[in-house]
Image (tube, rainbow, N blue to C red; front, side):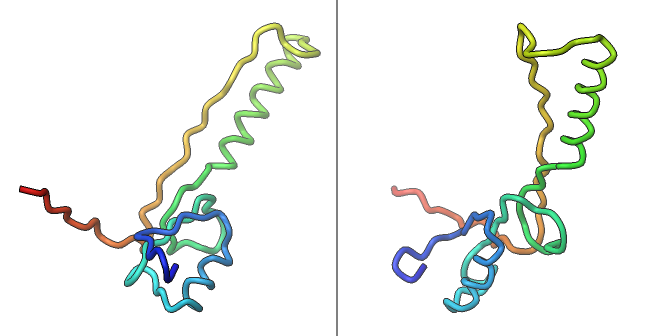
Length: 103
């Protein structure tokens, strides 16, 4: 942190939040903080919610369909179900910096 001074720290480790405070890098005054797997008590954090409940519901739908059709074993053609994550603005991002273009 002290050597490279990043604009933003992106992590999936909640302890990083405390480490930033110990290093004297308050969020968002000195550094932005984005948490990759938002869930639970960190409602103020900016980050990505993976929508685990929707993923579970989709898995149950796929499995019930396979049971109803009498399918078993590895299917001849793989099927993928895409559940998009949600971007959560939170309060841990700094406003974007303006970059001046060289003239």
